[in-house]
Length: 246
Length: 102
Image (cartoon, rainbow over the protein chains, first blue to last red):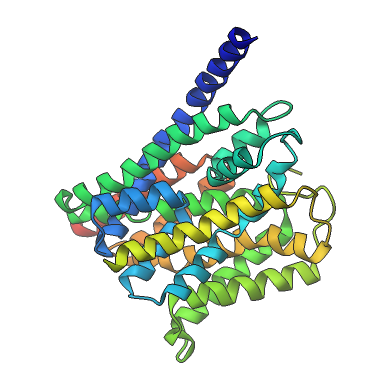
């Protein structure tokens, strides 16, 4: 029994590493530009590595580093991280449906820790019941690239010329666009919400009085207000869940 | 050092968000408002954080606008995360190089 089990386990780990590698390579480049933001917040490479290994969320970490740079209050960091990472609540709930009911609490906890947009994608795409070993392996490979990319960006960001840093600093926004635009193309409501978000965000950053709000507060207020309005006016029909292309 | 405290606060909140549903909720969320709200949140958050910040991120606002246009166009065509991010960087580099020539 153990031989068969071990062979099976090894195959899952190899498969996870293979699927995690291309994700990791993409992560490295984006994390490098995130490291430039982290450096401007005064973080050391070791701190950047730790922050990325534990948080592994591009939007959340970008917000975190901006807030550290602005000497924000700790509650503000907690609130912004909660808002920017709220989507993982849904992914975590969805992933629970892919697990066999006898998967232990420890496995569920560790699998939850590893959730990112891409790792969640691998988990959902896994045929049948998800094997924890597969996702651990994919996550670990991808997250180590992510963390070392951040540390490298902090360490090497200062040796790069200004025009290269300027170019790299938009990488993270490119990634955000690649996440929000494809669903906006498929669903008119999402497209409308994205446009409204752009317009409100511009208004809040430009108009007197409104532009005195911190970036974090602006993100919280607009996200809660616009998403609530969207949910009230255009409730999502059953089956229209994340990742299921119409 | 307070940076470590910031990192730990963020890590703790991230961990709770990721692990609570997976360990506690074993059924699907059925409340239509909550489902819809959670469904829209990621798009709204990322949109708010992207614009106008992308315009201010580059050295020259025109380069930022170019990155936004290229990013939206390529994402619309279904190009993946990584190539979109790289294309945005290259368009900033190209526009700022052109502006220096003029």
